Length: 381
Length: 212
Image: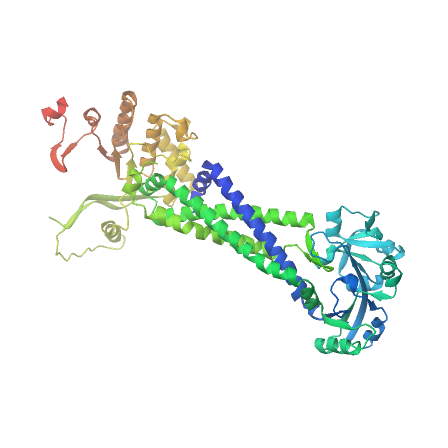
């Protein structure tokens, strides 16, 4: 079959405009498929990650936006003593937009030693020492830095919070790269006198043998009578609840991904049918010089697969490049979903492209293979 | 009338430099209702003959079209090479055969040209090279000069004569042009679907044909 490669390539090159348009259409469709799938992957990572199932978030009862949750910071010490709890991290959250936004900035203030111990972050630029010594120092996730054009040494302000960028980091958890970490006490003071001594949430790390639900229930039970009642959920559930509206929307747009696959199928099949109809006589000639119908079928299917795969690879490549450099994310109530596609998604996209190409070539291939030689040679086209 | 009639069938293929001839000028007839047994030692060509009768295998055949029918996206060289892609042979052997065929039709210098870059006569010569490149037993030509001017027609007919004389390839040419038919050694004339005349030499042909 490889011997016929020049014929297939030259056939496609011979109809450059049609080939380019089909490849472009396929690329756009696979770009959207990649984008939609990356959003879904981001949501799944937040809600189904194993670590998210073994970490609890304590939030003020009946509060949703981070600004409205104010827990006394001394809850930290009390909860840390509870059976099954390995560590507790007090976190102050500040965001410029509680509603769903593509450019929400989320600050998380926590003790520097806890940040270093519990977050898998690597500094791309800047120094840890500078951050630890600088009271208003901040470590900025590379996605935010890319989106806002921030670099080390810059002063960065959102509302009444101004920080000095001490480092840009990358994280093994893509959503983390949409955060700006600051010192806890700095963020408490920056939000005014009322916020000193309060935190937005407590992140509770459990010991290996702890019963997650029992610990969560015990915390809420203890603070039911005040001073501030709490709602404790796994981190995964907390993030799923916070992003519930967005999750519904994302659940709906996954149909858009399927629609893109259908679009590619229709587009490539149409182009291949047109190509076959243009070359009825040519296929008759090929059969006359010895090509069997099965070979003609294979040539048509290879052609459609080549179109679909080329477009698919370009679309996926563009999608990955765009998402990698844009740092796009969507956030609601301080929780963000990173649009970062995984290598698995690239493989799925490529497999989808190949399968769609094969499928799109079947009907035109059969049409070409079943054409009778005499009728084909008489065809005027 | 026989149900199966095999007349002077030869099957030949190339294995590298070597030409293999599993069948050579075999003729046989099998009547309706017959129960025939085909016997022979291993490698004697029994299965080859059976495959030809059953239509599984094909008699090596070349085809020359009236309208050339070259693949427009391929160069002259690639058009000629196309039938060889179906045969098991090395790239070097393929290249050698294409070059010989191109040389036979005097188009070596046009090998990289596309059909749109060639004249009608040159296209037809590429068509002839494509028909003979696999060394077929038989070449059939459907009005090979039908779309050509007088001068080019003469060149193509001369080429067909050389293909027959020098390469020993059997040619069956369909034509309505009496002048063109002069190049042939035998003439068969059909009228309304019936064979009305066979002639073995120009002299033996009817006066009406000669005048026409």
